[in-house]
Image: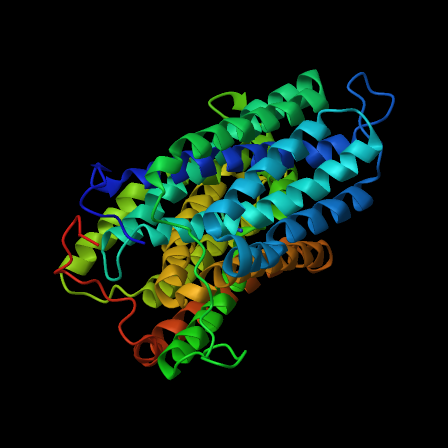
Length: 453
Ligand code: GLN
């Protein structure tokens, strides 16, 4: 699995990492680009010069919610396909192919093409997203400190795609023609697929099919060992944190988007920032702070302080919660200003805290899964992780809907209290949970940078 002496490294990491980085960058470009215009296309009038489907907002939001859920939920069969039949490398290739075809079909102005395109994209993301993430982990040996850094680098790639897509695909789709926008997302994915195909030579030892060993003479699979079972329990528990985090964070696209439009004074230096523009802010912060946050954690660890993945996730949940305290302050301010609007700086601050939280949870969780899951179930566990992020997205939508009656102040305070209490609880139990991991999260300082197979 891990990189060998013969294999060249670039900036201390195997070259395969950069292949996965660019492939995923373009995959996310196509995903976030298409997602940015989906709801606008659904609700645009059929009589507009750039004609949409003319749906009402509720139906459009419903489709959008289910789409973002299924896109991640299909990661479970995507993971199974890799574990049982194809291996991760081939499943990613299949997913990339489905995504190119799906986006290109959306470029055609036809309702059957529209639904077929969506289905192909859901299947494509399900096959590609979990497995490419597992492959990143597969490039590193057990205990290699570079694994966490690799996931941070990979995560920055994701966000370069996520940052650029709403601006480029959004502009072409909204201003010129929806279908050109969808087509551009398809071109992005095609570039990703070309990079992946070209880069196969750097991925020889990673993502290959690992058959499940069966007991001699029987058809029974070898069960999990007691240690593997312990690790699986912790992994499943960590999924609860993941749901809580994404349910809070993903308010951004829904409730926070509307809040920014209606209740935030968006004039900065005489320029009115469009609400949708703020959708790129998270990705922008990730690109800016991804490396410094990873660096700070490294420093923290070198001082011998608590640095486990679970601790980071707990702290990340608390920091995300604190972001909602800033939003609660904004909600209080709306009651004191003449126009009923709060300063945009609350939002800048809140999103910053959300991203610091995200950087302590999301790439950490990806890395954590590759450390804990038994190799034979690695892709399935990664698929399940994305499935729970999908649940978080759906829950975020429900919380956003609840805010329509309960009011934003109550909801922001509620999220703040829930996230901080939950994070603290996790930190209190970190020591106990770490025992169940059996050292899988520990960094092995004796591992050389490049290790022979
Ligand atoms: N923003 C990240 C990505 O697009 C995380 C998504 C998720 O885990 N649901 O990959």
